[in-house]
Image (cartoon, rainbow, N blue to C red; front, side):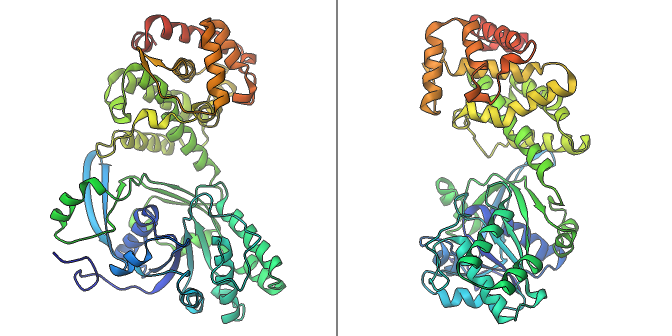
Length: 476
């Protein structure tokens, strides 16, 4: 059987216009797929040079396949469960700067280069005071990028049209701003001069981004069947869900250079990503966190099964559409579309997402993902969000650590686990609720100060403990 490469597959070659830091599953199933679509549909002609950002990586394997790999997209699309696959051909080559730093720096001399994309994990955008300009290479990603940009600045004499559009995908808030700040710190540390600093500030664009696509990665347990289906060997097969969202915050000129709209891609260009970040955290993450204790104590183990159950699924839909969406400021049609997309993602028959795996650190997750909706609902409606508070009561019940005689594998900070162990030792529901709600270490605010909230949670927790989750939820 043949190996996948450019001699065995009929693919195109593109002009190298993008340098990408990171060769992992996420970028290949997310950004590279979108670049591939824009190349196909809009003549984007954007080839990618991938840089391995750490000493260990997949660049050799990627080069062995000439940058090619097969992407499977599995999930709900236009209301149907669909699995489809395609060879992605936008990556032209890979470079390991730990083996050949000169080749890496030579990327800067390419006059066609325009974009930088990265995903070096949340820890990747970090300052390392030990990095120096003459390191080969620098240890940090920002250090490597600073060296590349400085080389480009020198090669083209600081020409304004040779600046870059930098689009990081690391999962930290204001990723572009943070990356630029570190680059300017290196510019000062390494004494690169005021002209270089001015070029960075005036001629390079650093975008803040929000990325969203579930990427399970390499389907190791299915590779025999996949290889048989494909008819060729591919060591870099990657799986992703159908849904995708890329929010790019920057000036309007960025949108003009990326033909996403012509391809129907879900890329949002904006001058303020915050409403989209809030939407994702409140609806997607908030729905997950609201669901976990309710669905798990109901006797369900998987997210998909929760949506398929009329009672649990109905609870979650009502919580999203009636109590979370009304607290957000984007247009109602946009919110409803995103919420329906979220429910489709939860129903994805190709992904089995265990509720217990989402339960890690549930107290802090409730604080950041659900509580803002609770407080905003109270502020806007002068009423209590009954379902979100039922979820809070369920969370307290969950931390009792028992599901019908079966121990729940609780995972949280030890202080949180100790708190609930001590509270449940009393078995006094009103005092447990009071102590939990007034624990400002959990919530950052005393929740007993909100009129009727303590009584509502107490009522729900009493119903859950006395009647069981199934009866309590049906009564809700």
